[in-house]
Image (cartoon, rainbow, N blue to C red; front, side):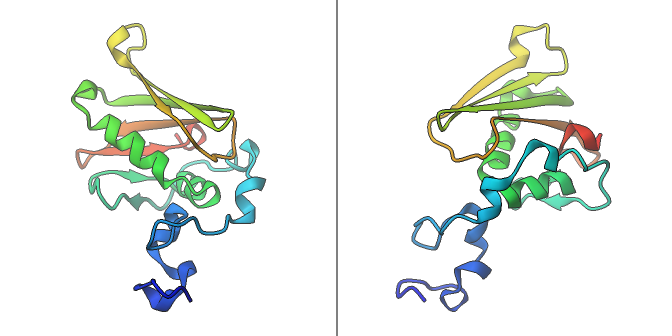
Length: 159
């Protein structure tokens, strides 16, 4: 138990901050060995979703079982937070579908958001991540408007 911990009797593995790979003092928690083993084919088996997971901040936004597996396996809650913060920016108003493609090279990432009308320049948004340990070289996610006024984030194979 860490002497500074004030949650869950010092058990980092049961703390909600574990999802972000940090303890309550923002120190990294030792990496989960499954993260380094994640491969693109691990995500291809997800087709459809019977269960949806709500985002804690963007209450009208949900993600699928495949995206939840990605979050847990890659420790990338930050990616979903980033996606939703961009989608709720005024630049994305009235676009019901987005393709989100992240490429990682040398521990840096670029996220390209392409709106449904990809021929228009204003429908392409680029974001840069200066440091990441995301285990895949590339990931594609989709975001579709849902019936409760938010977005559903899913893997392409789950559409």
